[in-house]
Every structure is written in C-alpha cells, then in structure tokens.
Image 1 (tube, rainbow, N blue to C red):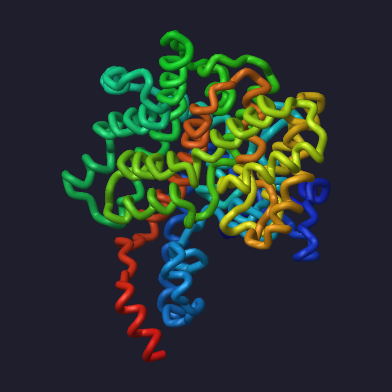
Image 2: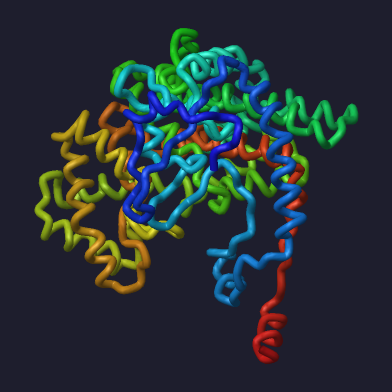
Length: 470
C-alpha cells in the first residue's frame, strides 16, 4: 500500500510501467519519491501523523466489521489462515507471492535503485520502501547506505560474548547471542527508563532498528570467519553498499556474488507477519521489549527446521542425492529417489508452502539469476530437474496443497556455487535479511501504538462442549 505523500512521475514511469499479473488485468502507475530530502528519519516524521489518523479512522468507522469465521481446524492447526495481525510492510498473496508495499519482486527489481545499471536491487532501497511506502531515488539510497555504515560499530564485549561459546555451537546460536550482547546499547530501553511519552516511542525504536540493521552483517560475518576461516576477520569497506559489504566481510569478492547477496538480502527481508520469525518479533515487541530483544527472539524462531533452517536442509538433501545417484542423474532415477525419500517418512525439503499456492516468486528470481550467471552448474541443473519431477509426485500423493518449490529450494545452490558451501551457516544469512523487514514493521508498530498481543486460548474440553452446543 503506497502512502500518500508521493506523486506520479509519468515521464519516467511511462517507460517503466509494470504490467500486473493476469489476475488483476491492469497496469498500475507506481508512485516514486520526488523529494530531495535524503534523511529517512525526517520522511517518517512526515508520514507517521497521516498513518496514525488513518488507523484511528479505520478503528472508529469499521472496528466492528467481521473479517471471517474461526473454525476448530484453525485453532487446532496452529492458527493457520486466521486474519489477526496488522503488518503494513508486506502482504503475501497465495497466487502472486510476496508484495513489498504492494510491489511484487519483479517490480522491485525494475524500480528499486541498483549498484549498477540492470543490476539487482540494493537492500537499502527496499528498507526505504518498507518504511515510507515510496520508491527512493539513487541519491536517497546512497545516503541511507552511508548512514548505515556510520552506525556499524560493534562493542568489544559482543565479540567476547560470542567467543565464550564453543566454536562448534550452531551459527544461529552464536548469531543470536551476539544480537543479545548488542542489546545493552538500546536507545529505546534508556528512553523508556528515563520516561518518554508513548507518542514518541517510535523515535528511539527507529534509532535502535537502524543501528541493529547496520550491525547484524558484522556480527554474522564474525561468526562465519570464527567458525570457518580461523577467526581471520575482514573489516567493513566504506566504499561498498550493504549487500556487497556483507559478502566482502564473509570473504567473497566475485562481482556476481556481490549481486547475489544484494538479491538474497532483498527477497528474504520480509514475508508478512504470520511466519514464525516475523510474528515472534512482533509479539515480543508488543510487550515494549526493545528491537534487540525482539529481533533476538525472532532469530530463535528462524532457527527452527520448519522455518529458516529449511535452506540448510535443502542443500544437504540435494548433496545426498548427488552422493547416492550422482550429479547427471536421469529424471526417472530422480523420481525413484524422491519416492524413496517420501516412503521413508521424510519430506522433500524446499517444496510446499503454508500460504502460497504457486511457485514462490523468490524461487523464480533466483532461478533467473542462475540462468544468467551459472546455467551449466551441475547442482543448478539438478534443481531444475527437481522442479519438473517433484510437483507431479506430490500432487499424486494428494496430501499437498502446494507442490511447488519455495525460496529455500534454490538459495543454497547459488551460495554453494560461489564458494559459500557451509550449509549450517545459511540461516544466518536469512537472519541478516529478515532484520530489515522485522525492524521496519517494529518502527510502525510503535508509531501506530499497536497494543500488547494477547489472543484467547481454550482447552480441548472447551472446544468439545462448544461444538456440542453448536
């Protein structure tokens, strides 16, 4: 949903207009930033009063409107499908996939500023879009990139805290520990303890959020270098943007890898509010926990095998295919291996999604990247064959609503190609990306004064008695 303080630049957009998917059958003229103001904080200061009034009007005029019926299946099925959260920064459509402020991934790739002509979008541009609802100029993105670099300092105690853990600890454990160690500098906590009016909660939250977004790549890179590269740390480069700097601090300088990291961080940044990490961050923050505490909690949710850890599981499974039947495997042999996996009581990782009912557009854009940069890679070819083999088998089973590949089905193969082969580390990359979406929404949670989250729970006896009466 695009905010009101922007205008259509028809002369520019006429050449960049994006045809909406056939489901909508219309061309939407996108609104882009025209202000010369390079400061993101001042932009938000203008936008927030408008959105506060909008929320107040929505609540007063339509607060009693019903959004749907809750069934026993929903209660017993993990609240799946219940409409119960306000999440402004993105919306997940079952057919179209994720939309960032109403822009699809292909639209973001075309409209957001890139490091080079025709390149992948800069994550800083997506951060601006998520916070303001407006497509930024390249100058605004460059200014934001510079501000993030200025905030990217890590106190020594953070490194010492991570070093206190065994080097064999999972990378997500070390990463989340580092984020918790950063919490001692929280501006929100300091402001709350001193006494601050709730209408201004968003301001220290903004400071914490931008600092956190700036700091997590350094913490994540430190964990990687500690575990896999003998602790040889690579400093941040003041000439590089957010995604390129992250790749460089990990130890990768291939220009294509820098482009991949820009794309990876952008498409993994947000996925509406119902997924485990986003919901956890929102829930913990609703208790007025600061962004560091909230994001650390979100990371612990992301570390689960049914959420962010899935990208690790996909590459390990693909490598198990190679070990058992080889790289240049026929589709018939591949079908046999897939059936073997399913008959052993396991799932084929990287396929299916709780909301999507078509191929994940995040998978599609990564596939397009692979076709452009590594079309002959054996593992990419294997993933392409799985794209043809797995969905019909899952449909044949008759138990899967969405047999199509999701984002995790592809990312590991791309990272592996450029030398980031340590699958255990992949979820940390996901965590760095997700900081942008979770923190953007958290700023708006504070600005809109969203309340403590407290859904009602019931017992099985209550459900049984209710159903008898019904």
